[in-house]
Amino acid sequence: MLFLRRGLPGSVCGLFGGILLVGGFGNLSLGLAVGAILGTAYTFALPHPIGRDGAAADRAMTAAAFGLPMWGAINVILLPLFAGQTPQWTAEGMRTLFPALVGWLLFGFALGLFATGAVHLAERLFGATPVAPARKIPEVKTHVVILGGGFAGVTAAINLEKEFRADPTVAFTLVSETNALLFTPMLAEVAASSLEPTHISTPLRSSFRRTSVVRSQVSGIDLANRRVQLSDREETLPYDHLVLALGAVSRVPPGDGIAEHALEFKALADASQKEAGAVRYEIYRMPPPRINHYEVVAAWTDAKAFDAHETAAHTLQFRAATAQGGRAWRANLYDQRLYKAL
Image (cartoon, rainbow, N blue to C red):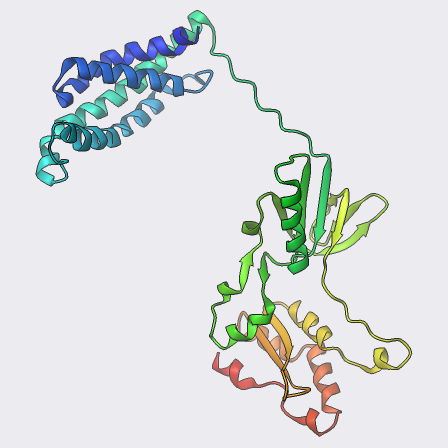
């Protein structure tokens, strides 16, 4: 029945359409045979069932467009090679084959138009072509949510993908504030123009095969209902297993006054990174012999964002606190020459 619905209409339409190819092949039998083969293949490639009425013109134009590459492959290349000649690459050679090109375009148009109508008629007479059953996708039974897009979160996602491989019943979601993994130890090389920014950053979505990436901040975790609340949306992320990879937190010893009087570099960096217009803000400790020296690597979208950072409360607080130290702290902690040059 499938041959009656598809094969027979295609071969008949291709056989009659092959008359238009005879001039290009120079042989009646060859032209008709090629037309019948292409017609049969075309009708088998049509949707199952054929689809809505009025699509014949669209398919005719599409089939006509395929006439150009068919002409180039067969008449320009293959037929001369079979005849022991070189392909007709030259303008003069293609000009002599122009009538064959017209024949291919007309053949494609006629095949798309009449084959669509013939298949419509065959499906009315013999019934619609049965649709192959859709492949059943297994239901996701385990959902793993990873919080954090740093080294720990990305490594966890990659290893979980390797462990479960193609198991469709396990799904992974990674939540990150940024859409790229940044290799922060080499930011100084970028600032010194030794490396390009793209050399030390990798897009998260292209790093995974089956892990979904959600760019957002975590505002809360409902442990009882196993859900993660995000800061920029009302819906929550359900999970069966939760991986916390949100980064390091400074440990301050209790009872010695450090927590009350110390000002952390990390607190300054975290507050600066959240400012509007902040691209990057990192603080690095210099290696020996420059003990107790630190380097700030920062990037801003424009001068307005940088000026806002200069007058921010955490910036003023940090500078005021360091200015109260000994002689070493009264030096210029921020080299403004780099910012002015940029």
